[in-house]
Each structure stands twice: as structure tokens, then as C-alpha cells.
Amino acid sequence: LNPVLQTFRDSPFTQMTLRAMDLGAVNLGQGFPDHAPPAFVQEALRESFSGPQQYAPVAGLMTLREELAQDAEKRLGLKLNPATEVTITAGATEAVQGALQGILQQGDEVIVLEPTYDMYAPQVKLAGGIPVFVALRFEGGYQLDVDALKAAITEKTRVIILNTPHNPTGKVFTRAELQAIADLALVHDLYVISDEVYDRLTFEVEHLCIHTLEGMQERTITVGSAGKTFAVTGWRVGWAFASERLTKALRGVHQWVSFCAPSPLQHATMLALKTAQTFDYSGSVQQGYIQKRDFLSASLKDAGFPVYQPEGGYFVVADVSHLGLSEQAACDWMLTEVGVASIPMGVFYNQGGSPFAGLRFAFCKGQETLEQAAERLYAGC
Ligand code: GLN
Image 1 (cartoon, protein in one colour):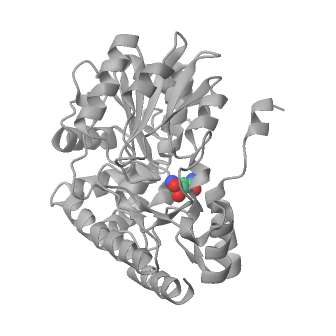
Image 2 (image 1 turned 120 degrees about the vertical axis):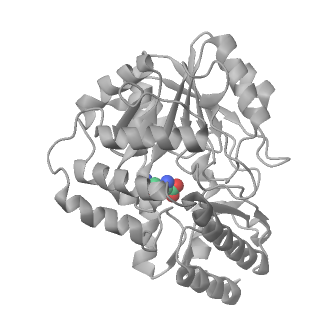
């Protein structure tokens, strides 16, 4: 078997969900909404019964690509040709894999900023690449360490993977940070794969798409997701925006991996996007998530845990150092004694680990779930 597989572990997110179910714990571990998607999204799904039921084109339904291109121009200021620069994939996960496999040759290096969503490094390895980890500077709020990034670039570096808003920290990269990454990409002839699945979920700050910075059109692949956009993570509809040249590479992989994402769900995504453009959908999602974030943050603080205030995304990181336990032990205690499932920050590090014992809690949950978690935190901590 492929020896790379020996370096992989079972998804800690799925494992935690299984343990939470076994123990009847409130599941704030895996990041998926446990509330119903908006009514207009459910309606779009119903309407897809009478939509296409056979294969979509490899690139994805043209109607969805057009809708995405329109939305990207309006929301992100990104001008795209839907025929040649937009591709629909089976989830954002497949988009990132397709981008990596389309770009990398054996032994190429890919820079991954830590802490990191745990998917990127295994994907780099599957594509024959070597992940090189650069730590975000915790002091000052997980800032980009431009010198460390510069120092990590070698002759073999091909790609920098960016994730903004960021999983697990909720950091939203600033214009200055994105410009610094873009400057390095231009000087060293690198590509940027930018995972922006939480792009609508920013709170007090603006999301900026690195793709729109000068010179980056030719070297950015921007990845998005219907699952995160519409609270339907099971749909497995994602997309990649890239120049024609990069799109060709990505589609070359995509056609041999999934061929196409499910056409009824592509159709439903198109209908949902159409409706979302008729009102301030992002604004209403943000309002809901700010309340969830603030409620969970306050509950954690009341229970004695300082939190790192997220600017975007689904998650809040709490510092549980004062328990005097290892991170894993703190996570187990939180699960078995308090009855709340979380994810230890160690999962998001490949070297060095978290500078404090931290647990990541998902707040993309219904109010009832969050209240139940608050009660347990209050009673158990
Ligand atoms: N993105 C989700 C998280 O970070 C998990 C996705 C998954 O389990 N594949 O929790």
C-alpha cells in the first residue's frame, strides 16, 4: 500500500462525533451546523427534484458557474469567466486536492501556516509534495510571521496554502498580511491556494480575497463551499476559481477523481445562490453567528476559560491551561465529566504544538445546543 497512508490518522472530527454520541455529550467538536438550513435553501433542495438527475459536465452545471461568477464579482470584486475559470467539485476538499495535484510535481514543497485545518498536509503528501510548516505568531492574535514565511521558501516551494477566515482560530487575514503573501508569491513565482469556505462568516472585520490583489489572478486558486455557505455540509458541492491555465490543471484531476459533483445538489446550490442575491444573506448569517459566538464565548469565560475572540468562521478557542492537565486530558475531562465535546488544539499542529493548552469549540449550532453546553459548563467547571 501507499506508504504515505501510514502517516495519516482517522479524522479526529469524526472520532469526536462518535464519542460524543456514545456518551450523550453536547457535540461542539466537529464543525457542522446542527440546525436546519434556511427555508429558502430547503426549498431549493425540493425544487432540485425536478432538476437534472444525470451527470453534470465535468466543469459543473453552467447555470451554477454563472451564478457563482456573478456572486464573486458582487461580493468579492473578482471577475471570472464562468466557462473557463470556475469549476464545481465534490466539496471544497476535492477542490484543494485537485489544485494541489494539478500543480505539484514529486518533491515540491508547500507552505502550510500553523495552526492549520488538518486536511492540507495529508493532501499535499497524497499529491507527492512535502508540507513545510510555518507558525502564525500567537502573540498579537495569530499574526502572519512574514520573516518566518520568507525563511521557509526554498527553490522547491511551489504553493502557499492560505485559509481565511481561519480554522481553528477564527482569524481573518488582514490586507497587509495578504499583500505580504502576494508579494512573496510574485517574487518567488508561487501559487496560492486560498481556502475561503467561511468567506461570508466574518464578524467585525472584512473578508478580503487574495485573488483580487494585483498580479494574483494568474496564481491564485480560491476555494469555496455550498456546505459552509448554506449550512448544508452533506451536499458536497464546492468550487474553485482560477485562471484558465490553472483551471485546466484542476479539471484534469477532477475528471478522474469524482468526474462531477452531484447534479441535483449543484442545481439546488444555484437556486439558493440566486435567492441569496436578492437580499442581504451574508448580513443575516453574520448577525446569527455573532450571537452564537458571543453566547458561547461568554459561557466559556463564565466557566473560567479565557477565549481567543474569533473574527470569523465557526469556532472559538478556549485556554484551559489552568486545569493543569495535558490538552488531551483536558479534552477527555471536558467530554466525559462536563459532557461537552471539543477538539484539542494539538490536532491543528504538526510541529511545536499549541503555545497553551487549548480546546476548539464549534458554535455553528442551534441555540438549544449552545444553551445545553452552557448549562453543563456552568455546572461542571
Ligand atoms: N471542517 C470541519 C471541522 O473543522 C470538519 C470537517 C470534517 O469533519 N471533514 O470541524
